[in-house]
Length: 119
Image (spheres, rainbow, N blue to C red):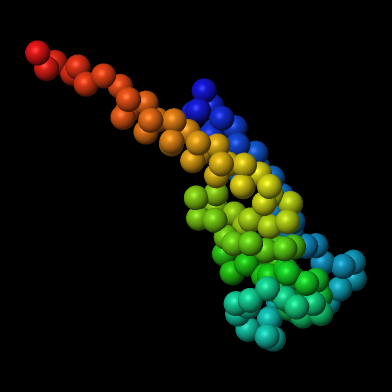
């Protein structure tokens, strides 16, 4: 049951849209980010050259996915995608289910009788 729960919550997070910001219609996308590498989320009004958008507060251009993410949290290497406004709840659910199943397995191992061929 724990494995199924972990798999389901992983897939819910991995398949959810993180909140990719789309360029406005007829926006000039020059392909060059004039501001350089973005290390901190936008405070609002920052222009992203590669995406051709003006970033809202909390968004960030991911250097791995090459898109701007609304309410960027982080890029998750295990999910191979960004975690943002639209998939953060699913990510937290995956962490809770995964950690709960780990605790369940640890308690099962600790409380199991130690009768592995010892007489």
